[in-house]
Length: 295
Figure 1: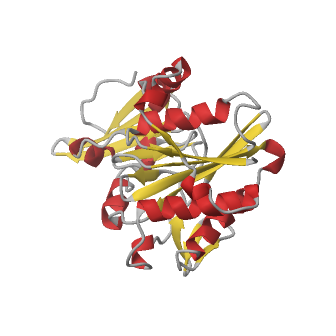
Figure 2: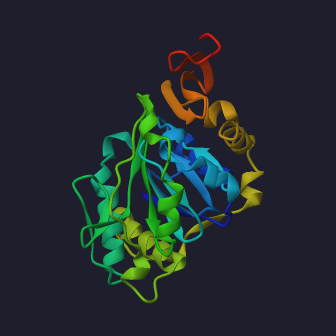
C-alpha cells in the first residue's frame, strides 16, 4: 500500500501539531510513502515559522478571548483554527513534493461534494475566486509535507478581527507577512457539508490517487491520547512548541515605534526586539519638554 490516512480525535492544538511532527519524523519504512493527516483544533491563532505575531495578530483581543498563540514549524501565513475548520497535511517523499498537486487533490475531493473548487496561482484553494484554504509546506532531508486549513463553517468576521493588528504599520522587520485575500467557506456553497464529510472525501481521493483504488475513507487510523502517550517523542514535540522561547523568541528581529501626544507634549519610543527580548530602547520628546535621556 502506497498511502495511509490518519484522523486525530483530539482538539488540543499543541498535541495535534505534535502528531503532525511525529508522522513527519517517522523512520523510513514504518509508514507508507504517502500519508494523509486530518485534524481540527480548539480556537487558537497559528503563525508561520518566520512570522511576527505582533504584526500578524490582534494579541489584545486574543488575550481577552483566551485564545492562545501558537507558532508552527512550517512557513506560510497566519491562520485561525477552530472547530469550524479542518486541517489537512499531505506527507510525501521529497522528490514527489509539489504544492499544487496536494492542493489539487483536495480540490478534486471537494468536487465529489459538488463544490466547484480550484487551485489558484498562489497555491490556494478557491471557490469562485475566493480563498477557502491556504497552504504552507516544509521540506527536511528526504521528506516533505504540504498542509492547509479548510474553512468549513468558521465565523469569517471573527477571523478577520483576530488577524487585524493595530500595530502593523508601526513595526518594521524581516518576518514573512501574510497576504490578505477575500475568503469564503464551504458552508456558503453546500447546505450539508461537515467536518466528517470533508475528511472522508479527501481520504477517498487520496486513496484513489496513491493506492489506485477507493476505500481509504473507511480505513482511516484514529489518533487518540493513548497514541500520544505511547511515544516519548510526542511529549518532546509538544513541549517544544509551548515555550515562550519558541512562540515569541523565534520572531525575526524587528523595530517597533510608538508615539503618543500627551498634555505635556509628544513622546516617541523606538524599540528593537531580538529573540523576543528588547535589546535597544530609545525615546524622544518634543523640544523643551523634560524627558529621561535615551538608554
